[in-house]
Image 1 (tube, one colour):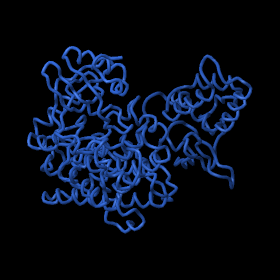
Image 2 (cartoon, rainbow, N blue to C red; image 1 turned 180 degrees about the horizontal axis):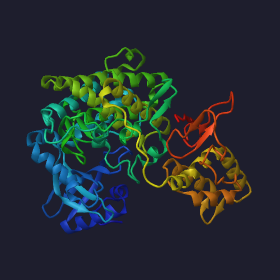
Image 3 (cartoon, rainbow, N blue to C red; image 1 turned 45 degrees about the horizontal axis):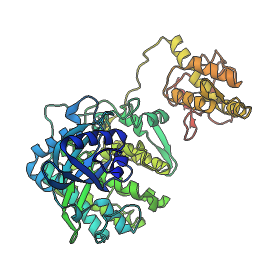
Image 4 (cartoon, rainbow, N blue to C red; image 1 turned 30 degrees about the vertical axis):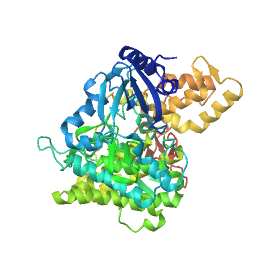
Length: 548
């Protein structure tokens, strides 16, 4: 039990936050009761409408309570500070469409903070999150409206208008005009994408494990029947040249615009111009303007992907890349309407500046970046992750086709360890790649013989860790040798990587690692298949012909 805090509220925000809130409440002679949650299970920060009963001031009010995580030790980047900046920099817009802060933030011992806000609309009962309109339009369960009020009725036209109104308002009323930074040189493609993805490729970042799994410059797309640029290589600067091409269109941005962060006035009637943005944790004074509209669309798609067939998912990528193309007849009408309405709102706003070509190019790159964001989110269904990865690859392909001046990255010159040392460091990767079927069988036999557990953990888990290390190009030679010894796997060949796959010279056509991870180089049996790399978990990848 936590003094002065409703048990349901305490349970939802967790013990650490409940204890901090209880101490604040006792000190300030307040009591907090849960009214309803404003989250959907996808947010990492609990958000709720609460009643604050203030015995000291002898008054009561409804507030939004949120428990966002901090941003390391930089207190200027926590949500409270960003929200204050948003209000100060755009007071008129904030007065109509943003919440206002109440109290000072309460520090929680686990690195999070408790913040309180009032909605600009003042009356909570008159509003619902935009997701309610989406779900009512589709007649889907899964989101609760406020108790004791008339249920919201929504249709395609209403939801489409609401999305268009929010985007038009964020651009026209908040950003007002697109801006550029003339003091900074144009950005490379990778640097522009980093405006969306900063930190996500670092160890511990959401995209780090996926980047390890998707190596190489190209990736094969079965639905498209061709190889596409690997979006991870693009985002990490390994695909395009380091030529500065892009002057970002900058301005005030929400940073995380989606249907659970927008409240719409729905009572007594739906008024799409009456919208309120309730989360400014990622607000930027000068962020990439193409990000918010793209993120909103992809969030809606992520919430409704289970309604689309495989052929419709294919057509949806075409629609996103060409909103007024000829694939719309294959898709639900409401989805086509929303994509086109958002696109029209964007272009109606930007066209007066003459920067529509720049907007189109940067929108494609924002599609790439935001699609990768969704690849890394734990809330995404596993079967949908591949679709977002493919969308990112198709966006990279579109940018490459329309911007040949971007060029390809030069093959890096040899550097680092001396040749003998480099061969030793990566030889284990090539051996694991070549012997993967035998190793897999040896692990299965070892587990079946009840040898699957030891002080080092489970054999399947260690096997998977070694595979991940191999995809990351790490030196795990000693660990690999010990693992092979333990499972009775194929004997490591110390000559591997010198000439051929097992020390034999390769005199005719030779093939090398397509991922640039190891010194594997082997021949092809006359009339036989091209050797493959077996490390990628998705599908084997053919070795590249050695140009030497």
